[in-house]
Length: 86
Image 1 (cartoon, rainbow, N blue to C red):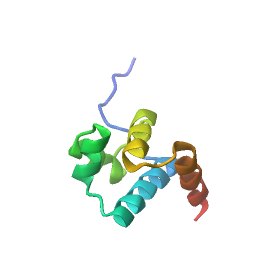
Image 2 (cartoon, rainbow, N blue to C red):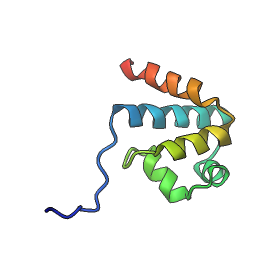
Image 3 (cartoon, rainbow, N blue to C red):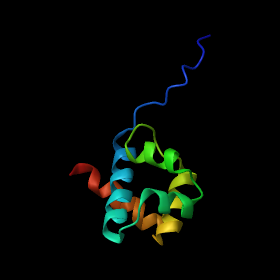
Image 4 (tube, helix red, strand yellow):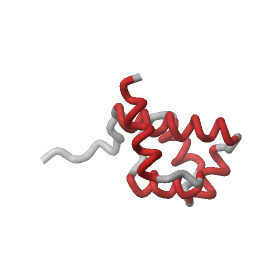
């Protein structure tokens, strides 16, 4: 049996759409990665890596980020999914 390499799989299309949506909201609200990470209970490095699409956000991360941004989770996800074809 092969051992895991420790590498995270590349972020897929939905993960990239979600990180883009988070970044758009951060830009609109002028929220830094450090501030969002602290509000969501994540480390700045952890969040930054995911916003650069070096790894994917977990569902728990997305929930925490939406709560920190004051975003409605279903609406946020619908917006991210809707942007995938763009």
